[in-house]
Every structure is written in C-alpha cells, then in structure tokens.
Image (tube, rainbow, N blue to C red; front, side, top):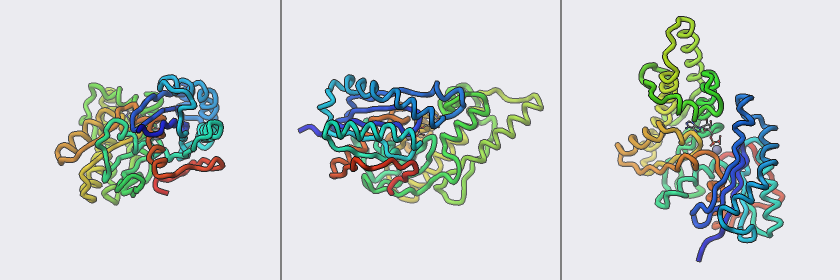
Length: 336
Ligand code: KG4
Ligand code: ZN
C-alpha cells in the first residue's frame, strides 16, 4: 500500500515553492524565485514578497501537479508553512493551502518551517534517523538541534545575534556582491586564499552558542582601512576569509554539540548548508570522528515545498491535522 500524496506550500520568505511528496519520494518540487524583485532593494521587502506569492501561487500549483503526473483530486493532504517567516508572505501560502484543502475535502497541516528544513535530508537519505544533531542555518535562523526522535527537539545551541545566512547577506551587501549574499560569497571565494586574512571567530560563552554580528564589523573595519591604505587584498581573498570564519564557527559548534550529547549522526538543513565550503568541512569533521553525515542536495537546503510536505507526512501519520481556522505564527519556534 502506498502512503498519502502530500502537497506542500512554502511562502515564508522570498520563494514561492511547492512540492509533492509520497512515501518520502519527491514527485515534484518547483519554485518561483523573487530574487530579481528584491535585488534592487538589497534585501527582501515584505510587501513585495507577499504580492509576488499571490501572483505566482496558482500557476505554480498547477505546475507542481503536472510535474508530479497527478490531478488535484489525487492529493490526499495539503500542507503549508505556518511560521516562522514574514507574516504577509506566510498568509498567502497558508490561506491558499487551507482553501485548497477545504475545496478538495482533504486534511490541512500547518508546518513549522524549521521542522521542514529538518526533514529535508530524509527525502534523499532514507537511512537518516534520529537521534541526530541537526545544524539548521538559514537567512533568519541558526540553531543546533538535538533531535531525539522525530517531533522531539531540543535546541542545544543558537545564535545570540545574527543568523549565519544574515552574516553572509550583510557582508556581501557591504562588499557590493549583491543579494542573496550566501551564494555570491560562495562564488566570489573561488580561487581566494582563506588563510590570508584572519577574521574573528566569536566563540561565545557556551560551547554550542553561535555569534556572527562581530564579523560584519570586522570586515567593514578591515576593508575601509586597507582601501584607504591602497592595499586591499583581492575580493576573492576577502570572500574566502569571511566564508572560512563563518564555516569555522558552524563546524566547531556542531562538533561541540556532538561531543556534548554523544550522538553519532549529524544532519543539516537551511540555505547556508548549500555552501560548498561548509559541506566540505562538515564532511571532513564527521569523517574524522566516525560520525554519519546526512546533507540534502543544495536545492533541498534552500527553501522548498518538498520539505514542507515531508514534515507534514510525519505529522499526518501521527494523526495530527490543523483546523481550517488556524493562523500563521510569524515567530513560531521549533518544538513549541
Ligand atoms: O533556508 P533559506 O533558503 O531561507 C530562509 O529560511 O531564510 O536560507 C536563505 C539563506 C540566505 O541568507 C542565503 O544567503 C543563504 O541561505 N545561502 C547561502 C548559500 N545559499 C543560500 N549561504 C552560503 N552559501 C550558499 N551557497
Ligand atoms: Zn528556510
């Protein structure tokens, strides 16, 4: 017997993303990126995001169904991101999902965006099972989650200031690399010497806490000073060194969490996990300790609808659904 076909809608930020999943298999995963709409503002503009979701969501849903080779009546449950995210943006996918579930007379599930990221590795790695330490790093959140079982989460480390993706985005904007900053720095670092500049690694009070706000100040000070002195190193060196500083902190803190908990499995999710250097360094650190590592493909690290459907499948199997009068929660916290 095959499990339910779940359609997942993701509109928490600047991607309208829809995925169809059955039994942990991605039947389709499509998205309409708003990067160009926001790039000229240098960041995501909430009102622009919400409007773009409204414009994209209907035709994108049809595309997701077509790519999956199914009719809308084949959908067994509809899921949408409930939070965290931009309230107006969340409301578009959430309302659309509730309306679709109501019209089709199917269950509706509101999904925690970060639980979606946490489920993303399961879509390609059926062997990924808790207990695991999961590094979740995106534009708005950075946390290290002890996942004891599916649905049983303890945040053992979190950023005390900026999220890792935010650090990439802020530094990239300052360096004139554009938006979004993570992929831009990832690319700009090609051929750069990461050891040429020693940017600070904020190690914080607790071994698993993260901190990135000091890094941006350090980069600004460094670039201004060397620009004035006329000896600014190549952009590729600056980008590689910034990236290395962020990656060092993420890897060190994740490994601290592994040591603290004794867990032998590590996974990751969120846009920052698409970073090539982070993936390489996590792979090396886990191999050196005999830890199994499960990373989604880059396309499943960044926001997508399939991860929402995957998390919803778990919730549905437990008999959980969300009432049609439920609301978005822009500040939803994992495990709450
Ligand atoms: O998970 P995500 O797609 O959206 C949020 O939930 O925020 O993460 C977006 C973040 C942005 O800050 C973006 O710059 C960062 O992920 N990002 C990357 C890379 N690709 C996306 N950061 C570093 N390297 C990348 N290749
Ligand atoms: Zn995300």
